[in-house]
View: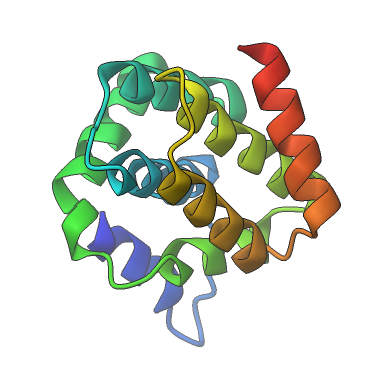
Length: 148
């Protein structure tokens, strides 16, 4: 997964490449995987929610979402920072699309029935890196909490 992301960022000057939905799904899924691991309790319900969010938001099949998740899980420890993922997302998504992504991230946090203080802190960092303000952060949380 990290290699795919590096390829996205490292395109040659004469061949600019535009990430597709699949590549954006990888970056978004990687953020959700990082969140699911922050409380040291990777829950099956969180993983199921990640797959559902990928299918709904990125128009990938359930099988593709499962493959993306497995790739993200196997490379989660290789990530050096959240910016590896948020940089691509910031380049490609509108402010509204980033709010929808943050709502999906909140859904993963709520999937196990509780919000750990480390989860909330990481989501706040993600929101900052996605250039979302406090109001947008809270609105995404409210929408995700209402949906559960």
